[in-house]
Image (tube, helix red, strand yellow):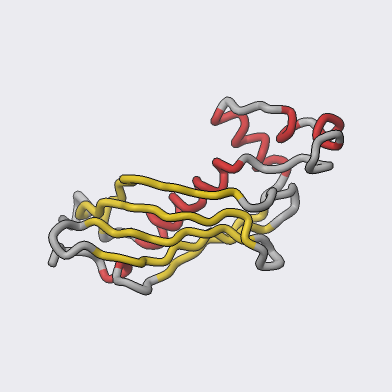
Length: 144
């Protein structure tokens, strides 16, 4: 079996939580270039189906990346995304606290490739995003 860190065995989970503030959304819009008024303009957003500003879906994807690359990999590995498929179920509003969670569902025997179920849920436990990820696990360059 491949040399995979202990945080990546079937059933292992990790999560991170973050309060989604107006500033968080503005900073993400600036970094990503997605300055769609739905995310930044209260008046505009109030006239949409959401009735208020919402966070970028890609911000939730970034939180999944943080779970994998920081929480799960730690100082043991470097995580390389091979694929990610997500479904956005509900909007994330300004003021929501989102928890991103990853759970290992499969580990290949022949290569350091891991599949995971990924979710993001708000403070009431309602899922806002679900999906699947596949990652390649390289040894950390200092430890490897």
